Image (cartoon, rainbow, N blue to C red):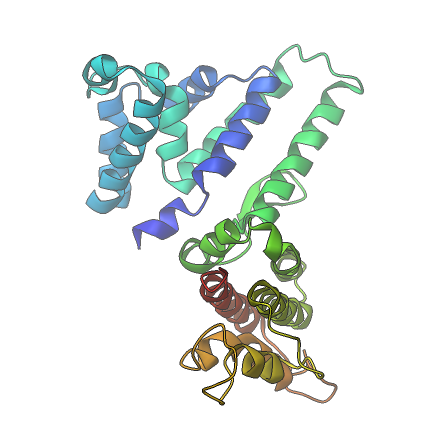
Length: 303
């Protein structure tokens, strides 16, 4: 799945490049380091590497993303000359780094960190402090945006979850959860991601359940529907989609399995009560993905 090769969203990539730029590792220098490591110097070189190593669909996605971002920054008359196959990568450094597959971007981010360490970076606290701040900001960006990567104790990038799940479910949910009415739901989904990284599968499942419940409450409020006296997931859903056809409603009952998947799984396992079946990490990740899908659906019901 090509999307799984591009699980780090463009906004997160731009934020990382801005961090590196602020400490002296500008995108042209980073792309030059990457080029020296992989033997790529032109747009055509990079297109060929992506085609050979990741396939034609990934190459097409790279080319489309590169052009989209470059068109935002450059007058149309310069597009053809600046993004042609023979154009030096340094001419489109930031746009290319935003567009490459994940592992090439992560390698570029590591090389950027090395550039910072080698440079004369005058920060209060010294270079160790600067690199520590950089790593903390990266972790914050990854967790807050559902990116399935983290840093190990040596500062190397390692996977923290499924890129396919992140690209297909979690990151689209993070986008819609920018709505201030869904702040609580977003907080619980971010915490579920943190729990997956620890790993603490049962707490991840519980946080996923709370994210869905918070979103249901937000939809009730947005439609002016009173909360039920008992705020269990089933009762919240019944308030949103009552069986009485004359009662106020925010949605139909057709999506009950979609919306309540995470809360119901939680209720059947040790995540919901002592003595329940233990939760595996794979099950927890699937539950967080199910919650993300529910959040996408519920966000669409906000007026």
